[in-house]
Amino acid sequence: MARNLTLMSWNVNGIRAAVNKGFSNFLREQKPDILGLQEIKISNIAREKIEFDFADYSEYWNPAERSGYSGTAVLAKVEPLEVTTKGIPGDVEGRLQTLEFEKFYFLNCYFPNANHELSRLSFKEEFNKKFLAYVKKLEKKKPVIACGDFNVAHHEIDLARPKENVGNPGFTNEERAWADKFVEHGLVDIFRYLHPQKIQYSWWSYRMLARERNIGWRIDYFFVSKKFLPHVKNAFILDDVLGSDHCPVGITLSL
Image 1: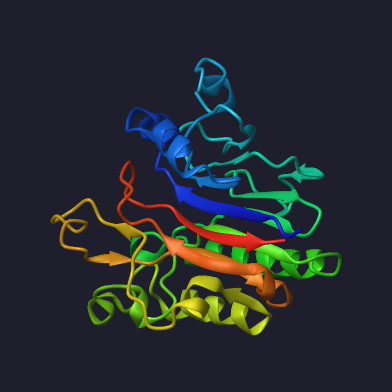
Image 2: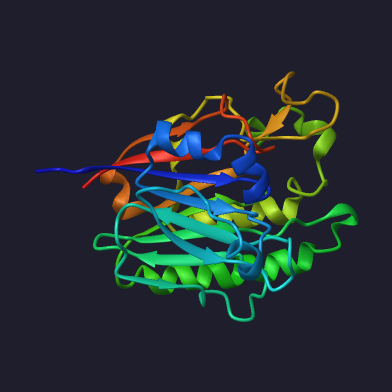
């Protein structure tokens, strides 16, 4: 008998802030089976002093060495076979977690921001290179589902004002070329695959009432190994969920 699983991803822009804005209610209402979180902004020491209300979920934390910065976490109702944070050699910013399940690898990713004046563009390109090599290594064993904040709008349809943002962080030729490479190497942007013409965003600036005016970007993704496509039944963006400058995105699997 087929089993349905709901996988979600959300850049919470600080887990403590998200909890104060109703994150636990979101968990109870949406009930994702696996949830990847990015930009948790909490150290292990700080986390141990707080009792989070994540009932029914096992917690896997990967904070950055720098306190209050970056970091990832996964909440899961399904027990993984193995968990590692060693996918990107030298990563001290908590940017990648790998959970191995029976049918697939689940990668929770927080890609670097190229930053103003593109000061971290080369760092991001190197991260992209290591990420792709790691994915291809994993795919020799089983398919990959990679989710998270990729910090890039791949195509013009993925942001509200493409012409004004050409060359800006998240919409440089270099970053978009890397998104092309992911696709060329067999990773499918499942939302765009299932919804070729749908305009929907996952991040909005806090400035100029951008969210209220829906002047946003789609920079949060689920990329799926091409051979795993038959198991993906739906892809969605929950743009009515508040609590961060990003909103949750997700997919439904049938296994």
